Image (tube, rainbow, N blue to C red; front, side):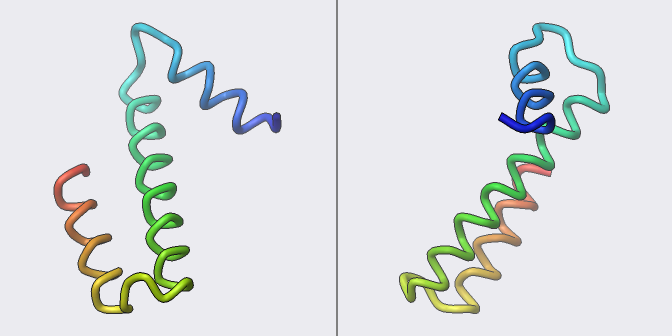
Length: 63
């Protein structure tokens, strides 16, 4: 496991997180979601406009 993954794992397991840690986890979740959507788009499972719409909606709801 690389250092970033170890750090994220430690933060996820903490009971009391700082505001910065909470934001880091949110950003990590958004990046992961965007990667998943882009993979689906590259496979042709969703179209470009649909991918953009899904990403915008996810960010509006979760950020």
